[in-house]
Image (cartoon, rainbow, N blue to C red; front, side, top):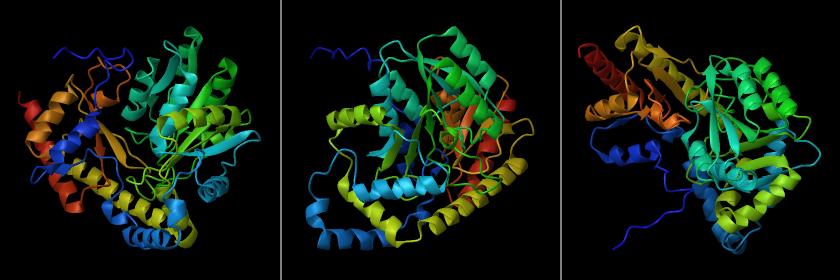
Length: 398
């Protein structure tokens, strides 16, 4: 049979290295630092079971039929209230829609704004799901280096000055994926100023912001937006359940209207049963207490992972010090290809994510890698980091 001639916009796309790593997780004895999910013990399974039973018993007609594309009205109102409580009230002319996870919000925004060859400035490294969404519309990606306090805004300004077709800046300013870095307040203000001067949008992705376990809160970029310039993406995946696939988009209404039409083409509307479950959960359970407990657990596991690195890693291995979220970022240095390193780790039954997956430039070789600290047990964190240390030491003997 003849080969398929794929569309230009997808022919060079490759599957997410993170998703691919899941295939190895069924192996006996595997320890995974590769995922991006909250700790399984934090899922409100009992509460959601009760809620699902009540919905299907008493509200089945609503839950099992079509809904409106913009989302379940009570959940929209609850989400707006939660954002307002966090200082993200939106501007006059903003509106909020529910999406199938934050990933869909990113993809639909790209679909609505990007023509082939348009540019997107993004952090280097960045979230692989967003990068692939951008690539699927043949966007040109302009990497901006990360510093210890977030995106290098000076480098961003140079990128914008030299490239006239950049439509938006993509950033995860709080507990960034993959680095765990949080952008400083000063840089957030400068980011808004630079975006205004160059007339571009900011796509602020904030799935981890409620999962702080150390340090002081930093206001979302959207909370300082006075020009409807910030397109804000959030999610219930990290605070309630990743499998329910419920996220949201807050942006100027003319954009959300166009995104709504694009969503109708994609999936008509997000899963209504899932939206109703999250709405009932927010209404009848102490969601904030559970989120706080989840953040504390993450902090405990992150501290343990860093302590184990002190014990088992050579002293030259750099790593970030997250104040929240799910990830930290390590760098082997010395010209090591972290794709090869990840393969060696997998041979020792430890799954990690090579930093290559997070590079806007797919040809770039990096010695960095991402570790998730939320999913593994404390026992497996120590066992897994010790095994990684042995692999690293093996590199020094080559």
